[in-house]
Length: 213
Image (cartoon, helix red, strand yellow):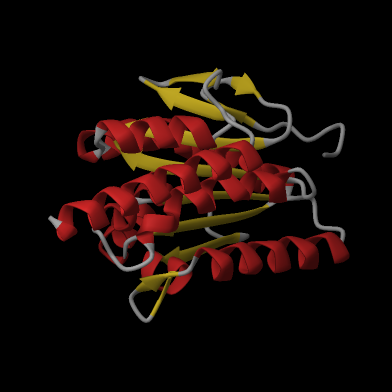
């Protein structure tokens, strides 16, 4: 990260790595913190990428416009185009795409990348979303190599207890009630992967045992 580039959220400067989970209760609450984040990135000369369900893009553009934020230098994608391939989430495809994009930016000596991915699509049970938490965890390995800031926004009203725990385990920082915290529940990717696979194996064994009765 360049010495003169500020990366902040909720009024707090962040050092790397920066993989932030933002829990929100409403879109108004969400944008209260995201609009300054976008504006700062554009002012720094960073590439700013936002990803969300197609139904929210018009609202997103209106909020940017009302805040006086130009979309020049900002890429806006819908979730289906970014995360899904023929209606399926493929974590390896996504990790490869992110790595390639960051490698291209580094080759052009770009200032950096900051993203915001709205994750409503991930809570719909689409094929492949069972690997979402592994993806969230492995993103941290990418951030050990490349200069970027990733925010994943989740509607707290739609999350179950287990999902909340996994999200806390896979992000270096968390925003709750408009306050950002360095996440003490964060688990390093390799450790999380071992725990996740053990849980999956146990669940599969329990299912097989139940079916055999």
